[in-house]
Length: 186
Image 1 (cartoon, rainbow, N blue to C red):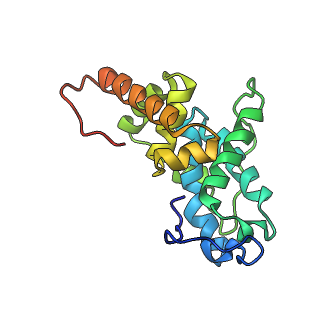
Image 2: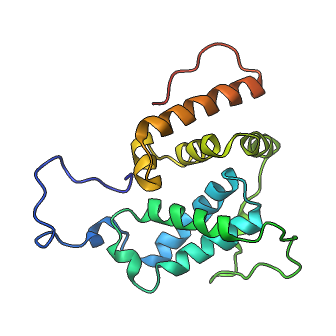
């Protein structure tokens, strides 16, 4: 995925290969600090409210503790996949919480870090109007993943992801009133 990729050489046998600890950051606190807000925004791009997104992101991080995260080959993609599943399992009838979201160590709630501009809020509204496959392809792309990485993480064909992304771009361009061709992001 986008973390680091091995050079294009013949891979050693699975038993001779070391676990992917070198592909994961060494310090979980730094990894959490770097990725928590990104995973939360990713889920918001998929349609979650800030509170739903933060809750699902926290659950995803909990699923890799205490040291499982060190053995993941692609921890960024894994977190997003798990967080998306956690979000989809949340109750659809949930009202806004009345209790404050628990603070993480250091006293900063990740939801408080998400101050969205009017333009970002408009984009979230436009993303919410997309069909789910298109919204999913666009959310992964906005988070910096290639179509191939997205397809691998979702268990889909890269051509299907590329096509959904292309349709999403056309719809978003139309909704934003953009004319002319924008360079392809394939």
